[in-house]
Structures are given as C-alpha cells and as structure tokens.
Figure 1 (cartoon, helix red, strand yellow):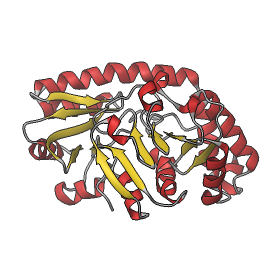
Figure 2 (figure 1 turned 180 degrees about the horizontal axis):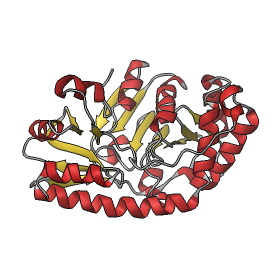
Figure 3 (figure 1 turned 180 degrees about the vertical axis):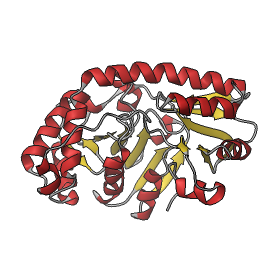
Length: 317
C-alpha cells in the first residue's frame, strides 16, 4: 500500500493501543449526523431510482448540469481514468496526492511531475488537485481552462468549503472534475465520490464501474447530507474558526504555516519526524511526507476534549 494518511495501524504498532486522535487526514472530525436509513437501503440491491435521486441532489449541491457519475469515492475514479484511453504522456502538478501519478504509471502512462501550472501544457492528460493536498495551493479557474492539454483532470476533493472556486459547472469531454463526499461530510468510510465530464466519458466510466458502483446506504446518506444546506453553511463557518485556532496553537510551538485548506493545515517545522513522534507519544497521529523533512499536516480536532489534548501536546495551555 502506498504512503497515505489514516494509517492508524502503523501508529498503533509503533506507539501502542489507546484512544488515538487521527489528524493525519483531511477528514472532518465533526461528521454529518447519520440519519436512520430505510430497511431497503440495507437489504435491497441499489436501484436506478435511488441513484437518480442522489445525482439530482448532488447536481444542485455542486451547482452543475454536467453529466455525472457516483462512485465508491473519488479514488475509484482516479483508478479508472488511466484506463479510459491509450497511455501517453501525463503530467501531474506536484507535490500532490500520490495516487494520481501512481495509478497512471501502473496503467502504462509516462508520467512527469511538474511544479508549475504552465508546465502541464502539451500533455495528453494533465492532473491538478485544486485546492491541493497537502499545501492547499489554489489555481485560478481561467488559468486551468486555458491549459493546452488533451484531457484535464481537476480533483476537487477539498473544494466543498470554497464552491466559488470549483470548475464542476464547466465539466465536459476535455475537462473531468472529481468530487469527494467523505472529507467535508466526515464520512470517509461510506466510500462515496463523484465524477463530472462530457456524456461520452461519463458513459465509458459508468461501463467500467459496473451495475452497482455505490452501496444502498451510501446512496441514501449521500442524498440526505448533500441536500442539507444549513449544515453545510454552519460547517464552513466552524471550520474557518477552527483552522485559525489550530494555526495559533502551531505558532506556540514555533511552527510556520505552509498552507492548507479549511479541512487540514500544513506546517513547516524544524523536524517533521520529531514533531510527529512527539504528538504520537500522546496518541495524536499526524501526516508527514517522504519528500519533505519539515512539513507536517494536521487535520482539525473534532471535540473540545480533542482540542485540549492538542493544546497540551503543543504547549499552548
């Protein structure tokens, strides 16, 4: 398995069992309250009408009329995209979520990781995570739309708090936009995500996904949660306040902000391994990266008791 956040098995193997706070991902730790589901969601095969109801609600929530497809997480789309056409030259704006380049290479694509947006031009397929993971880098919509590439993949897994920056309304045959459900709504175990593009590419992806790409419970929970506008507005306000709170705590530990989104923060530390280990001793798990000896990424604590443990660990209290 490739290096990812959420690897609590590794944390427990190194630092023991106990009450861990997993801040190694960008998953909202105050998740959407799971509603009581209909018995049919559990006992019946997922129906076309349930899928249609989810997609109608998702289109409204995301603000798009483009053809779309629900999948078992944005990761399912990432694994499927390299198989949609003959391998060629793919360029990925890096550093970023490592599954994009890895899945392309595994499917036979020649992958170049570049550091500037304009360096994507000329690729048969280009990938931009926007906002980016792990540094929160944002690319302007007009700059993305102006890229001269065969097909552009824009992964908007962390875009829910900033819908005004989304390109999902512009999705077409050349522009494929991915959305995640599990991160902002805090239900990553549900495995739900979306792809939006032109009718032909969505049809081909649907054929690859098979007859039941999303479970019955995911269809029902996703429809209810995506339709809850009040929860979404309140959550964005809360995340904004709490991101600022975590930045203040990090400053007390002499860490420098290096980027992030409202779902996670990235800090430049004197030594990321030492910082991660110090927090792990208190059973707080964070994310460091093999390409940086100083970057440490932290999600936001969920409850006040979790916040107080982080305060104590960072010396802010």
